[in-house]
Image (cartoon, rainbow, N blue to C red; front, side):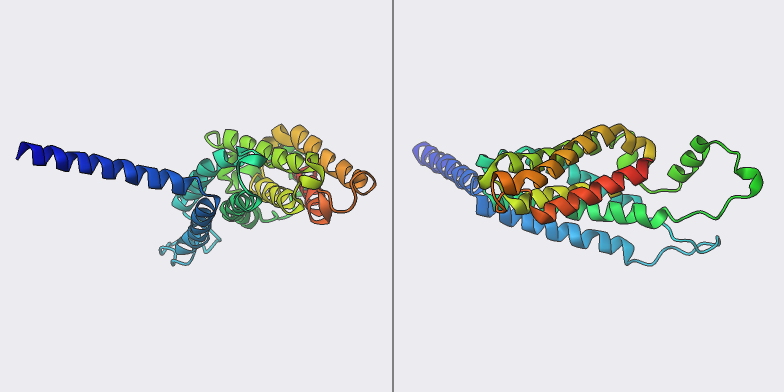
Length: 257
């Protein structure tokens, strides 16, 4: 009986090790990871709707547009934190489709934050003559207080800076690869950057990242101007990425200045 128990334990341990090998092999497959990211993107697309589609609680105050619940913001920030390490994958470590899937998930997670910032930053009424002499810093502080921007908080500003760096680095990496680079991936990185800048509507916060943003976008625009003469029209960044770079540069300048 003791021998039977030992044999069963050996079979159980062997089965466990075999299962671990199967899981590890599956995780090393680009197609499996791409499918997981597709499922994650679908969850990101549906989760905010459950909050925004639900009717707001009755209130005696005047009817004003309120931002989505804080739980929705927390979900988006948690998703960004989980996606951040995947943005540093080298080009050779995964297929182009996997890198594109990561960027699609990043853009999907940033869209509710950018939409909330745009919806709550409505233009204010014209000030009275007596209020014109107020300092620009006080006006900027009042505007920042009315904008729902979780990425501008003290807890998430470092994450925002890291995401800005990763988006610019990913686009630059494709440009430096020449003909081996991907124009689609370069455009996807800059699209994510555009949504990220839209989710950072506070001038003081975005001004901290402005030098790096302008430097990275200038490299993209310079590469776009010299790509045809150097590597031909098939090399990145391409027209779509160049358009996204111009939008990002204009958006950052208008927000800060």
